Image (cartoon, rainbow, N blue to C red; front, side):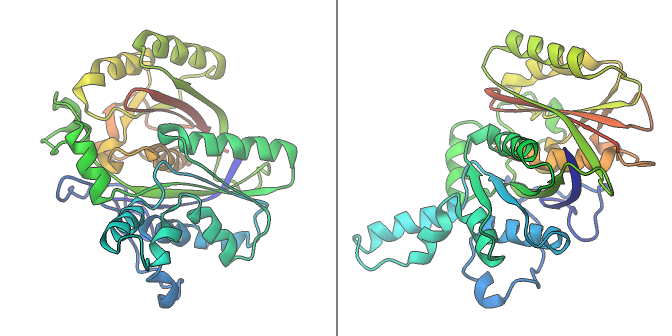
Amino acid sequence: MYIQKTSCIGAQATYGNIDLQKVQPFVNGRHTAREPSYTQIPNAVLRRMGKAVRMTVGAVTGLLEQCPQPDAIIVGTANGGMQDCIRFLNQIMEYNEGTLTPTNFVQSTPNAIAATIGLNGRNHNYNITHVHRGNAFENALLDAQLFLRENSHAQVLLAGVDEISDYNFNIERLGGWYKDLPDDLYSSRTTGSLAGEGVAAYLLSNNASNAVAKITALQTLTTHNGNEVMQWVSDFISENIADRDALVFLSGHNGDVRFAESTENIEALLSDVTLARFKHFTGEYPTASAVALWLATQFVQKDADIPEHFIASLRQYRHRQCLIYNHYKFLQHSLMLVEQV
């Protein structure tokens, strides 16, 4: 499965003038997406869009210029338009289930993102949303892989997106999942991680021509058992990685002390390759792995250097493969292997 084109809107300079060298500081305890002006979306339409919808529509615009009618539109999201959902529920209470504004309800459903893309392009092809918390994007990617196996000449538009609303930020923070960022996220040794949000979108096909990267393997696992995860990662490495000389291991270490030791033990399985981490760049949220995949496509490009702030340990200066390990609350785990074309 080949990645033909990518797009990303996140907390950093990942859209338009891309700059991976700098890391913008978090504000009010979270990494908020740096949204562009969305000049390609009419203002009358834009003002009715929820954040998750407009981020994704904005991100895929350039991809749709290359492929106006993709054969499938597949989105992975854990929460969809959470902010609009909360607004709608508040209106139910405020107006006693009377005359409610339908826009917030329409924009709040997770499938509104893929549906909006399809409606805007008058696309009647396969259109589906995967809502599986920390494996939402991976399941969407698996769906894309299966679709391309059955439709060898197809092109698939894939996206992974989540927004951080005030509601879920406060609830997750009270639950101990978010914290104020110390000087170094990975050595903080306190509970919680850094809140984030964003979207990454991809145009996928079976065609290697003009592709920017290739996805060669994908696996997921659901367990809290650290030993089981270690064995699973070890088996994946044995089955899929023959040459470590040009490999970078991109780890989803999130700075939560409850899972730090287990994550570092997993990282030690590839102690002889370059180790990089990405959660300080993206923040933690269920579909952060979508942006990790976007980063991997940047890292495996010819003559690409990995910015120093990603690096935990450097072994090689040129990388042709990238293995991504991510976990969400150390329950839902995923491995993705990306390589240079």
